[in-house]
Amino acid sequence: MKYLVGLLFMFVSLGAFAQSKDRPVVQFTGITHNADSIKITIPYVTITNTTAHNIVNVSNYKGYFSFVVHERDTLRFTCVGYAPVTVVIPSNLPNESYTTQVSLKAQIINLPTFHVFPWATTDEFKKDFLAIKLADDDLEIARKNISKATLSALYNTLPRDAQEIQSANAQNMHTTILNSHSLTPNPLLNPLAWGSLIKSISDGDKSNSK
Image (cartoon, rainbow, N blue to C red; front, side, top):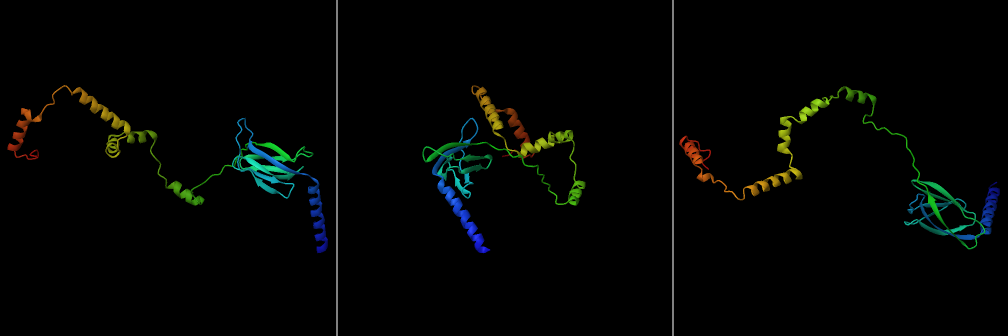
């Protein structure tokens, strides 16, 4: 029985070899690009010769390919994101070469919706749902955000942005330009300031002594 199977396999192989030998060899060359109006080459397309024991070739980074096939060979072009294309090498070619441009059409695959839940079991979901603390309504949240305490805390903690710094600089420059032709009052020449200082010293208040 083993000998019969071996002989049958040998006859089939010899028949396939003889069949491929009868067909002339062809240099198959071409470029793979998309099927849109704007031709953009598609690199690294897998080219499978389904007639010759699924021999695989790949186009280069520019979409160019060139390899040897036989006449009437069936080649399948596949690439991720594109629909497969089948090309059959014609017979009775005038030369021993065949050149073509293979257009691949973009293929959109809609995957089913997949939901991700953070709870492993339904009991954990019920427990977290019952323990959840509902937030205030939108009006109450807005009131908290614009309250005086919240704004004061934000003013003391948040750094100034570029727009605020630019506005402050512009205001200082404006004030400097307005006072450029006027005398700046000297507090040492203000009698009211001297009177306040003498009164503070006589009362024993040394907070302004420095």
